[in-house]
Length: 140
Image (spheres, rainbow, N blue to C red):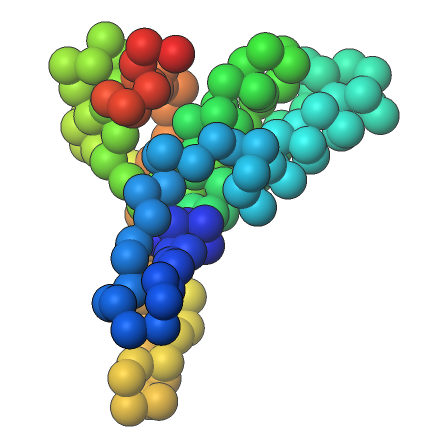
């Protein structure tokens, strides 16, 4: 969940917490604007946007970032947490990735819930995907 999405307001101290719909808040009023600022600043400093690849975690998975990177002529790799619509809105990112062969395996040591050592196998898959706007942003 995005940090911005967990914003809650308390009204008059006695009412229950009210959850704010993060899609109704403009990106300019969210902490997430820093991701867009980073794209703009780094491409200006580099002077060659096509050589710039932005890498983001799940917090950076916002549609506006993909739009800003595309407009700037840069590239990006983002770890997703939401299975967004892709292609022409008739597929999802997960469906597109499932069609790709595993391109790398990495074994890493982790700790389980008891703190005991364990091993996790990471399967690496990637491909270029056209991400469709979220339903609430398709008219913009």
